Length: 223
Image (cartoon, rainbow, N blue to C red):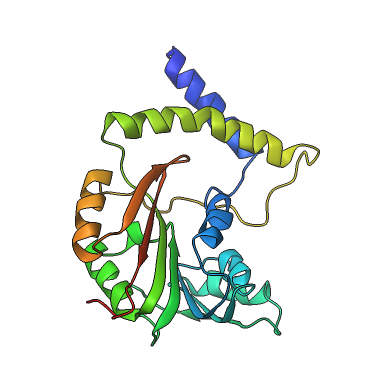
């Protein structure tokens, strides 16, 4: 006999399967609001099928998207107009990044797959003076606040799925995010280590099991 909690979780999973939506794309508009109106170059790390990279072309002269999965990079290229100022490359961000510097670096739901401190240090080095780094990441819940946000995210998740699928029964979104590997770091650790590498970085816990990080490099090109 299943408990009430197990039955509730099963019902939620069934609803999500019937009404999937992209939790990462939910933050794309927020990401754009953190960026200048215009900038020269942008790098999207863990670009997936390229949704954010294509949106960045409305602000940037040149956009590069990288992902470690050759198949998903191929899909990103298929979905992108040849005239768009964006290129997609297979690259492992845990070891290297395409030569910069970049005015903007974005990384959505990919940092937990990479060595945390080393990757942030690499982002800092590849960011141009005055440039902006924006991360939407995942952590493992540990604090009371995180668990509360997780609880609040459940009805919010159901509501978003219902709204996005209203009138589109039986259809699925073009892209659906999936947590290929669970996050291992807790948010207090992310906060502490990020601020050691990126002094003054702004980090916040968010709905839908995400956190955000925004850091702007000073004009002197701080190291």
